[in-house]
Length: 88
Image (cartoon, rainbow, N blue to C red):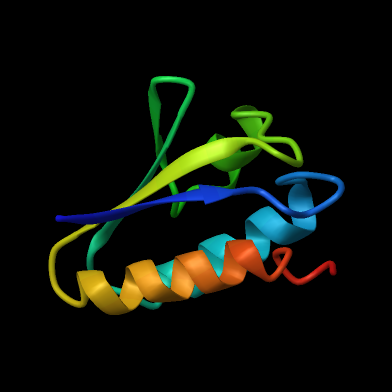
């Protein structure tokens, strides 16, 4: 398993459009992708779980990837989050 701490930079947080983009990108990887936010583990390949977590701009999260291509998945996740999730 690999992981990284990241801060949500999107001004509107993880709303529907960025959540869908994130799920689409992460679904391309065969590994498990989990976001830990406020002590809760969230399936990062589920748009409903991501939106229900109410992650806002400035939220500190941990992205965890486990399995085949975990390092590539983590790099893609961190890049996507740090770039503003397609909205910035």
